[in-house]
Length: 299
Length: 336
Image (tube, rainbow over all chains, first blue to last red; front, side, top):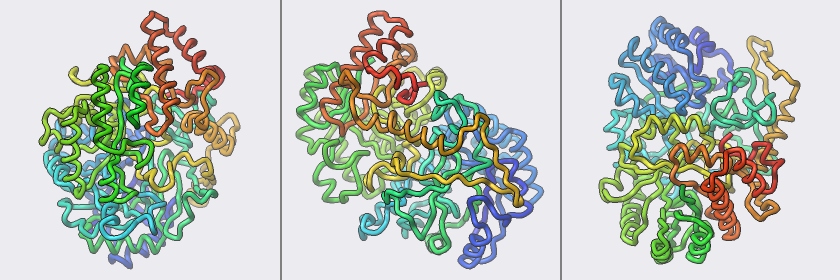
């Protein structure tokens, strides 16, 4: 198993010196214990730098250079993680890719936007595209359990992905995508994952429920007329200082022993508890997942 | 710019066309699909029931009627991704719908678009907002698959839209949202299903506990200037949910027109950008609401075509909606 350490931004690069420092969202020591019990000693050989969710949190070019140097010094392979972007951040993304291709021409790039994949194929053909988990449309709905899952074929329909359809396999082949990324969903991994035709990576311990350009945290402290807007707004990145524990007293989304629901910045996650995490790792090993991305902080 | 209205039964088609719609979109939920795949797996983003037509015969009747009235009909197959097991049914479904004259298919799944264009090269594909086309490179990606129209996701700033369109090839059509229904998150990246108890995101019951991030045992919080507490921010968020996302609870304004998300004030800019189609959301809504929405957009377009200035149009659109205070809040605006 290949182990990747995910670090969202430059100020978090100190985690390279101490990967097991406790995180705000992640009980790192417990997660480590579960990972090592399931899969043996964890030795990171790859750095995932960047994040998938917010164009306003794209790294500066200097941060990327710093991350590349840090990965090199630590003897780690390098993967740049990119978010979905509006036109506003497309040019900045391209700048980052220009630096990356100059300094590490065969580095990986995780794409979570069809436009970034297209850009890679047209302008940066030596960089290696990885299809990010936001472009893998498997449901990750905390309400999807019990009776709703059904049995047999119905259950399988929720476990498999459109990525396993021949038309999508052919399309991704055209774009030289060989690796796809996954969350461990409430309904479990597809037992037929090896037949999808890709190498696959699993993120732990946070799964993505939903993400968007309107940010509750960004709105905090703004005048009413400036709240809940999308592009062109400055962001003071309060997500560096706060996160939100979510609960639903109406019971539409029930409390679970398998996860807790949190929001960081513009994205809602389920943080997997130990039993569920262990189950996911066991299934990952069984279904041929060959990379675990340990992501203690998502943004 | 044409008005694109949702239709969910034959009886709605003529009133919507007579109200001013020149394009209609609909979904189909054939009984055979539900029988084969279960109630929780939908052919499009709306479940069986009043949002969808029941069968191909009704769709054919709508197409025939609409074409007689020089109105085009588009069909939603807009799930973000369809799994392999559905493909045989989907491909045959596409053939059936094209054979009865459906003018375009609304799709988000790049694999399905590729397959449909291979099997039915003449099929016209509109890329759904579910595909999250947020930049010009993404437009180019879907154009390379053979798409003819891009439906922009909600809340793309007008300046962003301008840049996207300017950076794109000139042979594509563009469609923008104009009325009803918001999404809190980016619908193309929302990994939950309305099938499991409705929208996950705008449940007003969600409770948030603010947690500060500690660093080496020290809190590193940064309270915003101005003194707003986080709970006040959440309270305001819930007000925004009610007004914009949940359409003021579905209640109409004093003139009978729908409240909720709206882009009427942006019509001059949307026209200048070359947007060809204005989408009214809400296949599951009543005919009364749909028709009122079409009439509201038509009246505003009439003002624009009569030469109203931008500021005058803004004022008159606000008067038509009948809730100037809410309009001023900006919480009902797709484009602000």
